Image (tube, rainbow over all chains, first blue to last red; front, side, top):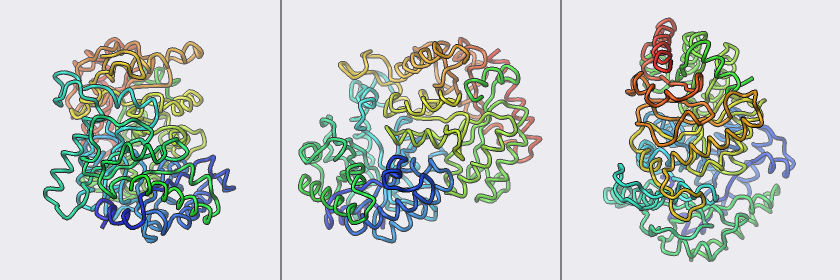
Length: 289
Length: 289
């Protein structure tokens, strides 16, 4: 049916891993591919061949398609369909943010049942408030997909805002609580309300991006009630120990470590990509038990 | 040459206004157009006819094009070229956010000199830190364009994060200062350093989105050194008095009130759009003196 409804089952069957599909300029060059829509298409085909049947989820980074304009977006449309046909769940890493009917439009684009860009989940950014993303949440709830909100990014520049403290007398109670913990609590409350009305869903429609290289924050991630995408694994520095420390309390099947660079560095041979993805998946499975 | 280099001259010649180009589902319907790429194209054509020669800047909302997948993005490409040919500066309202080489890719997409989606400015979101947007800043500085960062959004849900206070012992000094004022100070410092090395530019490459419906925050906007885009004017509630109160201290030509709904409601007749845009522009010009 979709991301949140299928994720737990699939992860329990295959192990937890999200494989990034990042056709950056430098990776296209490393793989000997042209820096255009043809190169993109070839890159995606090799990733599909390498990842299908191995990992449960793939995550194309939308910026690397957008770089090529409408021709690149057309390649992404093709990839989304082929990945689905190959039995993969797809997170479109778009990190969209806006308000009101603009977020409605992003919901139509990424989670609409007839959209050419339809994915199983899309990432979003909460700078305009978690409430601003509600049209994406409603679309996800309707279609069994998910909106995965960036809460704790693994880059140092993100800490200033994410660790800032709620002001006194603000629109949300909780003076002194950190922005990231407040957002996590808001997500947990929204998921809990949803799950109370949909007891057949194992996870609610709102997930969180939690960088795996950080120390745990105050909010107990086991209470989130939604999927967790954890970048920063592999080339970016987080290993099994960090995964256990951060996500040990989360329910089985809810956490998806994301590996991009360290797996894609094994390409362009699909067999080599497959072996690298398998190794990363086994490491993640062992860490998350 | 581009946004920051041309904006002041153009605004002083024509008056300050950015006209939104928002082909939402509901506006396509109101205008009697089909909800597909053909309807989008017609919508854009009417906006161009209505706005060219009247306002200095137009702002297509990217989500309304993305809603139609690659076919919609192709219409946006066409619009960007035609708007430039008609002498309009274009802000691509994309509100992109990410880190590292992903932001490089967004910079290639929206500010790259040969990109099919090249605009004069692009909007971005700072949840991952202002530093995460540096590749967009560098691209803007190279091409005389701008990255306009959402700092104070006009929706109530945004206040929680934007008004939060810097934590003690964080990565950025200034415990207790608000997120929005800290970001504005960071932008001002970055623009000042740039302008010291480029005395021929009237504004630096980093702008800010400042909702016109809010009370002024602590940072003096006259010191920003970059363009200010001010949504919330017209249908959303801010009038001449709010514009004066918020932006009275800003240098001439630096502030662009953005009107979307109240002008687009006059369509689909290009003559009516033109009259509505003229009226909004005159009101803004009077307010900003």
